[in-house]
Image 1: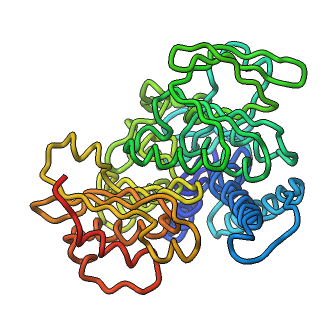
Image 2: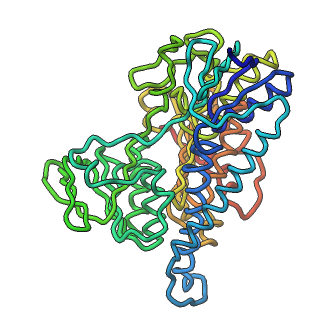
Image 3: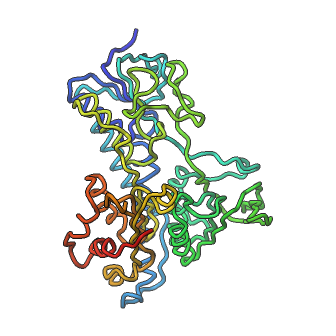
Length: 457
């Protein structure tokens, strides 16, 4: 006999718990299911722990450059066990708080076990069968497995495995030059590891403009990170305590040897063992759940939110998925995924803030556009802080005067990007920012100046 609910939520990533709160608040009886740790990737192996580690690496880096700021210190050596303890404490506080919130939530029943769909209305959790008219899939994604001969035998780490590291890898080899690989690469270089990043494309974070990619590379190489692009790993073998990788770099055979390997070559959705085929839920060729503009799957009464739907791979897009579903179900507000503007940060130091189209996409579109740029060497706040690497770039439609996109690489640009993003959502002309009086001294105060100096693209 099944246990009856009004709604079943599978997964406690960013969308699930908030949706449970809205549904129970609307008088529904809700079951929420988590098979591992409460909070999903962001809380346990993604945003929260990695940015905590980035903060420790930043403090170490600043201490090593104390003389640049007028004081001296002794030798700076990170204590990896204490760094991990700090990270673990912060993660535990978030995860435990979320679990307590859900378990104390009125009309919400928490199950901690693996869930599988039995049909379009029934979910099996252990020996229990749960039934509901509404089912929400919030199962997330995990690190993709590299297809490299011998790598499984020698062993490798992923972003999840890195969370257990409480020692300093002598030489960390990173497979993949996108945001996960770059963040780990810089932080571990600052902790004291030798770091080599291997990327198969011609540029790091290859979806960005070439000048941004080059700027990021310069920042990382200036800290002693070795970077190989247009590089394909064709094999791996153990050599004593070391791992040796066979690499072809621009057609030339090489060997890269290190103590540990981190695979950061993409993500795959956690949909393979969910029983989607029993319910008739359609997935694409990569296993992502197919959804429409309001996150409905191919089966009426089933929605997919978060990383598993392939509509975004970020915490903020997952949370927005919850907002879209709740607005449509409960508020008679027809919000859509297509209303969302692409936006994200890459948390290297200094960070990259991105919104909308990049220069490459604008040029391909053929639109008449204006471009404004500003090197961080001409931003007073950056000079005062002694952090002048990078530059800012914004693109505007020449006819409508609306902002098309921005790429901001520099100190505090992970926050500055929001002033541009908000005007984009308002569908207001760029002159709204250009004529605004920003506060001095800040990085944001130079955005109006940059917009006032635009030229035809």
